[in-house]
Length: 383
Image (cartoon, rainbow, N blue to C red; front, side):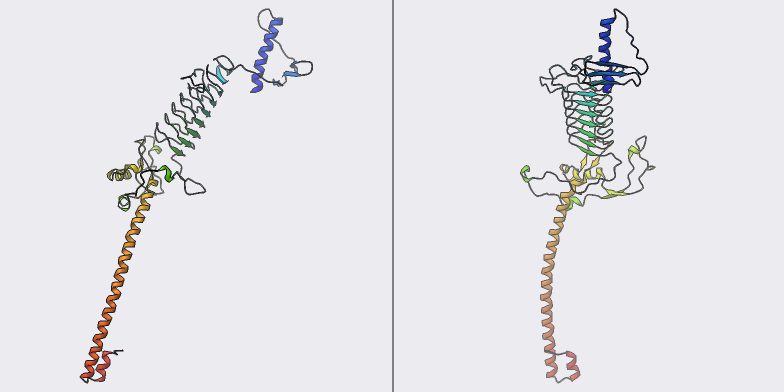
């Protein structure tokens, strides 16, 4: 590509010079003989060669283009389409890099007096960042990545159609074919994997790993660390929800039969997954948290009414509280049982004493009454 561009630019200069020297009007046609070369050099250095045998153009120095400040300056085209440019709107810092048919545009401008606007953007691929106006620090790599972004800044899209529909919003990141494709506006979202879609067209602060076909999430650790520093928390108190709340939750066994597997979007069981799985029903979780005044638990994500999602991990503190409740109840029962055991032992000892006294009295009566030895022996020893 570099050689080809160099060829056209330098050839234009050469032909222009020849025209000034040798042509009064019309065109100039210079033909190389078979195996011949066109060479530009000085006494010791060859700057450019064009070989007839292979058509290759070789440049031993550098090619310099003017800074792109207009639609026809410093632009390299493929056919009638702009292909490489670094358009710099007046007053901005510029430093944009656009490579690909119709990547970037020539209508970027400043929205304020901030020179960073419409600056520091990089786009590689067909139609990447083609609608950008005064967004900055955007990076787009792949066919139509970030193609509709207008004013968003600090977005990164890597993959065909990644973040394609996003028009505004900032600090979004997408990696994979069509990653974040359906997002139109929102900030600070991360999409990783092919077809990793946002929960809704307008959301913020989401992380999406993979598409709906992902069945296994693998890592060398089974836990995820999260901010939990006491210094960042206020109004700390004991959790009021525990065993009673947990008993209202309904764990379910079910088979997936996703609507998206059907052309009309209506599941009828014909494509149902044969392997069952365990989990919860989002609507049932939502009903429990609403009826108990605990929507603050955020057990259900409802940003998209057509795709309600569950967050069962938020039940963990309640599970811990329920276990503690059971432990307290068990400890109380154990203490009560211990007390009953002591009372039972005292009762047994008392009964044994009474029985022993009664046997002794009976023996004495038997002796007094001179009863037979057989009868006495039946009463047992008083020792």
